[in-house]
Length: 160
Image (cartoon, rainbow, N blue to C red; front, side, top):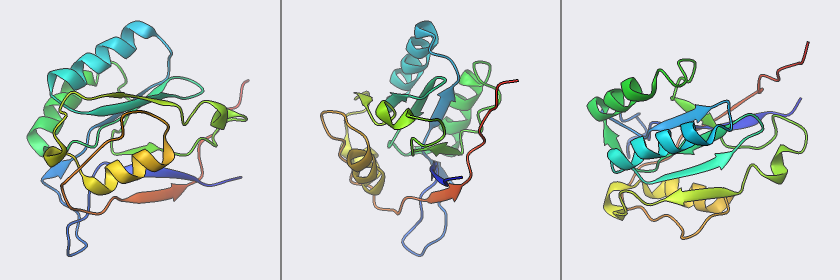
């Protein structure tokens, strides 16, 4: 089985420690329901978070490079929790290898510039997202800090 990569919602400070007071907001749904897609995008807009979103085999992933404080993160989390209570929002898969042929559509993303202020986006996250996903215009960020990636074996759901 291939390992996949996940992007973590925290960044590393210059000394290599995790910034515990700031986070990025990630979310996912396991449905292609257009009404839920719009509802989630409205929440990202409400909180002025730039967001890329892309289709997965079962739903959508949402990734914001806009750094927010922990209180705002908790507020957004509370607002969206009823949509997907199983979404940990801590790490999100960024490699299209969980299902056969998923890479054919996984990397085609859409961008919503709700913040549109590079001084509020993490530079390393923007560079990474610009590199792996196909969307325009490209994200820009000015906040320094290293992104955190993890590798793991994806949970493959088997049909009964």
